[in-house]
Image (cartoon, rainbow, N blue to C red):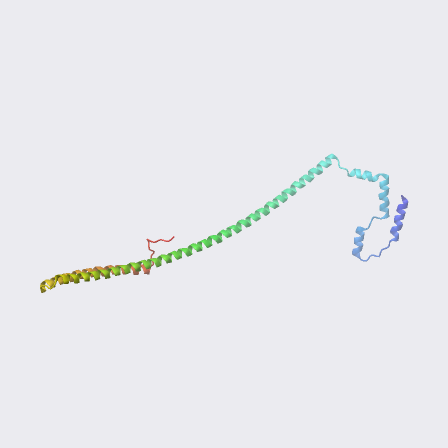
Length: 218
């Protein structure tokens, strides 16, 4: 087909574009269609049967196909193992981050629980101390009221006995008066000792701040 080659050569010579730049030259060189000689060679090869022989050379035998398949399978397995290893590494990193965050959360939670427990303990100690002070003061007031009541009863009894017995001789009156005075002094001393003990116990509990053992707070 020499006429086609001559025509393509004439067309190729008739086109004379002005290259705008070096970059455009390179782009056209990459994308420029084949020359007329290349086209002529291609068409001659097609007419002479060379192309069929070249394509026949590209056909793989069964052994070559099996080898190619095995190679592709090995590459796929290696790629899957690589992807699996990467996925496992990412999962391990994510698990480590989750564990670290959980430990920090538990640490903060334990710290908050300890702070709350400490505050509750201090509040319980304060309540116990106030309750003991109140209890001791109340007990002291009850003892004092009991002592005053005993004294009142004793004075009433003494007045009743004096009115009941009436006037007697000076000797008997002096003897009985001294006996009553002695009994009265003994009773007064016992009452005062009891009050002093109560007051001392009350003041000691306030100074030392002991917890009252009969009243516990949880």
